[in-house]
Length: 319
Image (cartoon, rainbow, N blue to C red):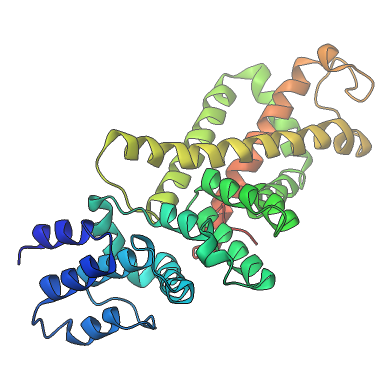
């Protein structure tokens, strides 16, 4: 049977009878999938990854498309499909299934919002599932879906979800970048000096932001699968863009504290006109704003590229 025809048959599964018929029709007498045919027809979910895209799609339909009489049976298969959604062994299958409307992140949200699954799990186990999948979604830069999952179950993981939505790994990297910037007085004075003598600073800062955005885009693309549609391309760009925006806001907040409090305490000021610790925000010298923006963008740039030392973890992944 042609692969496209198999996918259409599996899409049409709505009942247990549909499912059994699809298993026999799609897998047929295939030697490769012979053992899996029996696994799919049994009540107990398998422990290994599916051997083919067809088997993966059938397992997904058994977990999500059919409402079984036994909630325990359905919960077993939903738990299995959750493990497939998280597994890197199934990345190829999800790249194929995405072309047929299967989104692994939406499946995660659907299962963890399904009472037939959540009622079968004790509160401690459910909190573990939520932490695990919030972390997984953040690793894929899916901040909005991680927030959606946390908000729906905020009573189960109130602090974990809130803290990790603030991207603490990126925040820590920005702090380290700021420490590096404060390590030399020449660095403190560089933004103001460049601003007064050359437009190089106004070229350098946008270049740093662009390089940061491109790195996040590259890192994000390695952990996700996309169809070549406008909606998917828009999501491909918006996810790292949101992470960059959160990082920039955090970096600006850190830079504010550094320029207003830390640098004056060290006996240096950002500008020649007035001491920023005595001035109102609207009376700050141009040197203050140049130093504030320069330190924020440079710390963000350094923090993002420090992720090179943690290649297995993305900038958005929880600690």
